[in-house]
Length: 432
Image (cartoon, rainbow, N blue to C red; front, top):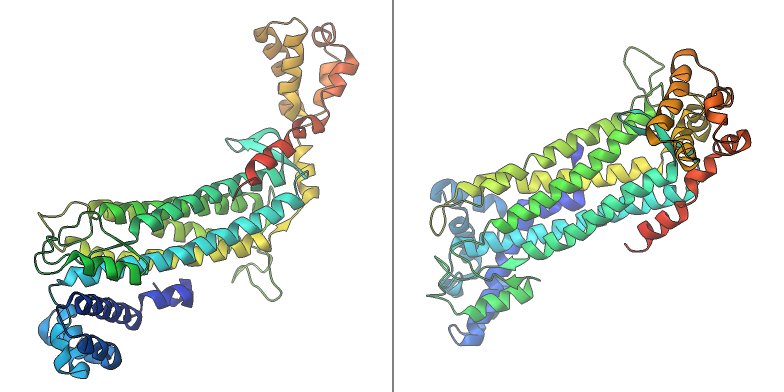
């Protein structure tokens, strides 16, 4: 991933230096287990830890000749360790190292992603409680529907990220497996104890059933979960983008001193961060299909999955990590305009209370069909002529003959729509 969309904490996981360090730790822990089993001298296992070194540049030089990255690594390692290096990689195959390393990297990436999700949740919770009772226009199909509160709107996004956090916990557990079972997974040349030992040391669990590789349905689930997190980011970003539209302007991204919105139009304040988040979400979701396709491999393994993962595992985790922290920053510094929300609520002269009137008519003996006709007839006058919906209703004898004028007037109390806000908040924020 390009530096523009990378945070160093996540990028570091995918550097060559980090990857080769994990390779070394796997090999050295495996040697400890072999020594415990009596396969190799314990002094040689100790030597491997003490003298084990590698140089990224040297590994790449060797690989240019061998065309095999693990062999290049082992060769460079042996240059430092000496004779004891003959025990390194005993009974193992390349995928024992590669797949277990990928598991370690994805586990570490998961922890950072969950930290990012938690930051987004904290920001949403803070803003939601601050605006728990701030009246706002609820919309369906982009059209005014009924009143909500701005806090309630944000609480819904909080709930989505809370689900994402739980899914990522499961995805982390799904991917945290270790495979040290040899060429086709039969443990023909290595004792299962080695796998258990390495798994414990690397913070993993032994893979239930491996071939030459860890089954790729695990990875498919992991990246699919990331895709859902990205979709939740885009959903929230899109909401903010719509609210920032000039005709709405109920909320907008923070616009810092000295910031410029357009090279041509000095007045512009564009939702560039949330637009950027929409694009990043697309990139993260784009890895889901290749991850699913990686599940299907020839027999005990082929390497058709390898090139895909070398690209999309770093890029997707780096992009999602960056997007989560950018999203959190947007919410933390979001500019919110309650006056504009109230102005939009009042825009259609009280039409947002139409269902209240419909229900009141049916409760006073009018059939639903006739009640709908009466309410819609007066509502359309507001759409076409403007004015007050309440005034039109009070002037319609077919309405007031069934529902007293004072009752009709009382139906326009906006607080009716907010009577269960506390209940929804309690249900939404009771668990994290």
